[in-house]
Length: 218
Image (cartoon, rainbow, N blue to C red; front, side, top):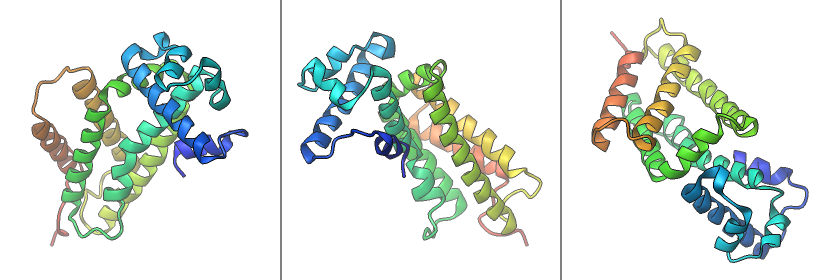
């Protein structure tokens, strides 16, 4: 179950009709747009409701506060950015080499981050002072680190990665590099390089850090 789905399932009075679900989705889309345009602190519930074509009071039928709707927006975006881990890196049926999987997962992650750069800038800012958003993202990243560490262990067992690496440390370091690099590059604009070059450079760093092999050393 995704983080967004978990939040929804925990709400005691969420929408039960198709129309209610559609209205709620409109509010989430509108909230994302308002947060992108105005940031979190300057976003107003009245602006979100108006963008969704609803009354101010209608907002509270679906969400308790601006904080709650922001947390759902953040969870949905994090779901999108995390998708390549499940569908590419951890895909059991894939016949691609480890190097190919890493390159494709990095490409997909950076494409999503680039597409969501405006809201990601807001999410990164809010996560630094909102404990709920921070805890949600921390839990997700901890889960991902454990999955990546297990993947590294499997590569080590098959002679495809540096056996001297601590999988948990390597997963934490590489994951932190990927997320912070994306923020610095695609949100803050602190790096001037082409999109393809960024993908290739980060892929090379992953491959070199793991001493990744396409075949076991003979």
